[in-house]
Length: 207
Image (cartoon, rainbow, N blue to C red; front, side, top):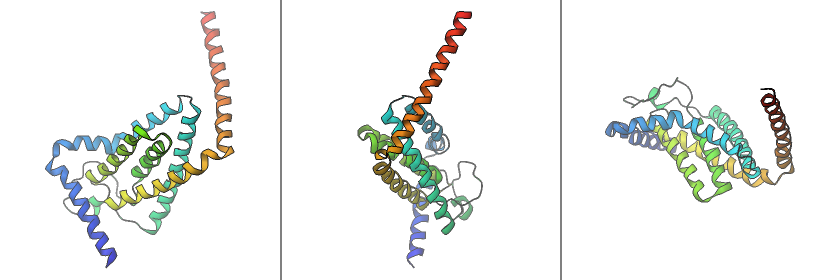
């Protein structure tokens, strides 16, 4: 009975969000972009933050990446114990706005990715970094809007990611192995930069 109620609420919430695309079709391109392509913005942002060459930023990116790996693994394991196809497979009259193959949509991988990184950013930086969390929320909503995830897929992804990001935040920055990993990386990065500068300097002299 309880599981039936959850299923009904899940479908009702999905219909509410997904039907907004029918009522306000001018918003569909925005949500399609968020659902499909915002991941590239996140990837570029991660690279930019990493190559600021600030040690604290690098620890943040390292912890966020570990949080994502942990959350993604937990998500895949949870998908073994519970699975459901995407709404456009199981329901009729779904406003499906992007192409997606039929597979298990529980939990939402996109939501796990964004909340693992964005919530980690907020934990480390606070303040205006809450905008990263709002972006992650938008991505989660967009996956429902375009018809490829149920609210429960997204909510489960959020909970897994928040737990993983919080645990990693309180443990990993304090570990000596974390500091050592960053120092080793920066040591070889500096060597590569010096080699690059020497190579470019030799080329300019020869020319």
